[in-house]
Image (cartoon, rainbow over all chains, first blue to last red; front, side, top):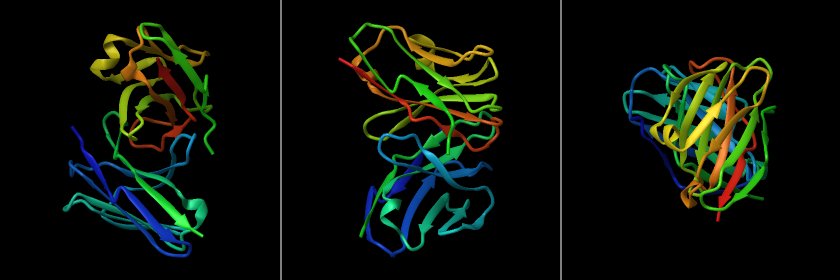
Length: 111
Length: 114
């Protein structure tokens, strides 16, 4: 059974700083890794995904995947107060499509 | 922005009562997932469908939970006999296919079992 762990549990950064979130997973088999953002009272919203080793950049977001070390990270450049939310790392099962989520990182960006 | 619709947003039931919630997936999305999110942000996959067929479901779902996605009607998730431990946010997500595609989530149904 896939296990996903996230760190830190919570992160406070000043506006304009870089936010760095980490995620480890238990199965190195090929599958997509997703980062979701969830604001209070709303469902998760996909931000970015990665499948291949290496990095992927979209706007202020950069994600790094290292399958050998079972590690993926998300970096948010120039963090804004509106980025304050819970960030969820999720691994997609290629056979069933189901997502296995980590417990999330609560990001707070202070103005 | 997701166009998955979930109703009701809030549901309060007594122990032993039935609890039913509905989901309308995004248009053109044949795959539907149900997840349970507890107050500690722990997610549990419950069941998924492709069109009207069940793809996978967990053991918990087979006992007190039932779900369906009939043609031309909303999908539904029903708990036959609610327990206090069922109190959670129930999230429906839809996708264009089951193999690793983006899942679009609704706002969820918050179930409280008294």
